Amino acid sequence: MKLHDLKPAPGSRKERTRVGRGIAAGKGKTAGRGTKGQKARAGGSIPAWFEGGQTPLQIRVPKLRGFKRRDRVEYQVVNVGRISAYAAAGRFGVEAEMGASRDPAGDPVTVNVEVLRRAGLVGSERKPVKVLGSGDVTEKLFVATDAITRSARQKIEAAGGFVQVLGPEKASPAGAENEVEDAEPAADAEPAAGAEPSPDTDPAADADLTTTPKRRSRGTSTEPAES
Image (cartoon, rainbow, N blue to C red; front, side, top):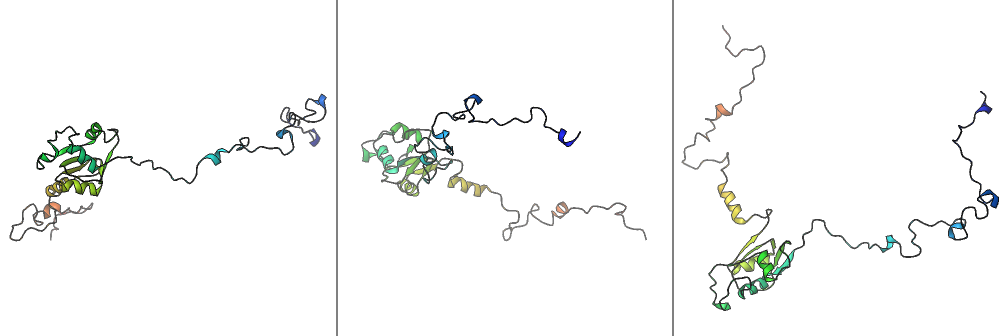
């Protein structure tokens, strides 16, 4: 075999179709570009984002408008003054005896999301509720809510009421006090003056228990050597 005998494998190369070489050639006259139009001209390319002249999608989309957090909580808000007014009017299912004749030292009116929903102050029992501090509180209330402002809490407590914030992440102050009282004393706390040390806390009594014996190396004996 010589150099002039080398040729490509059959079917591996295909000759380019010659266009515009007459009608008899199959792709003559318009050369496969159709009849006139933008794509029939030289250099007549259309960008991929072109939409025929209307405003493109990348311009129609609003930009620089901020964003919404994925974990944001949308509260149903209600003012504490309106809750107090509803309680005074007996619209929570509690019978009000002519407004001012109610005993202020009696049991507080319990207010939660179910009560607020039945009274029409909130629209749903599935969404969390936040109590705001607008208005005056004249009734003794026990408010159980998902969130509350500082001013609303102060007004409810000033009127003799109570507030309970729902949710495991916010522990009540009473629970925190119980945890402190029930906690065991520290191991390193000093005994009171005049008190005898307990054998459980005496370091000398626990010396034998806490001291770790040294590991004996191989080939050595712990017995005293004979003289």
